[in-house]
Length: 213
Image (cartoon, rainbow, N blue to C red):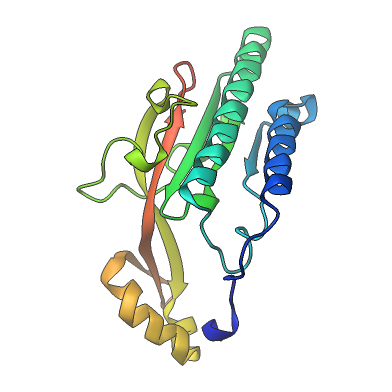
C-alpha cells in the first residue's frame, strides 16, 4: 500500500451547493419504504464528497453538526415508521444512530426488525475504560438535543492480518508506529494471526422504545 500516493487534501469549494446536497440527502432518506421494511434491516451513511473517499477526511465542526442534525432527523423519522410497523405486525425493532469520533464520516443510521436485531446487538467492541457515556461536547448544538437519545459507548476497531503486514513493509511500519499499541484483541485463525485495534470511539444512540434483541 503506497500511503503517500493517496491524498484528499484539496481545498473544498462550492459550500452552498454542498449544503443543498445535504438538504436533499436528508429529505430523500427520511422515508423508510416498504421494501426496506420487508428486508428487515437497512442503513444510510454519509456519502458526501470529498470527505467520503478511499482516503477520508473530516468536515469542519460546523458542517459535522449540520450532518448530524440530518442523521438525527432521519433516525427519528425511521423510528416513528418502525414503531408504526411494530403496532401493525407485532415485530419488535431496533433503530440506532452510530456516531463515530474522531472519524465522524463513518456515522450512520441503521435499523433491524425481528430476528435481524440480534445481528446488531454487539456490533462494536467494548469501550475503552475512560470513554465518556455520551458523545463529546463538540457535537452539541442548539439545533438538536443529543440527550433525547440513550447512548451506549463502544470502540471503532480496525482489523489486519499479520501476513498482510509481512507483505507490505510500509503498512507494517505504520502499524508498528501507530496500530500495535492500540491492539484490543488477537486471534489465531487456522494458524494465521489476526489483530483488531482501536481506531476511535463510537456511540450508539437509541430513542426509548427501540431496544436490542
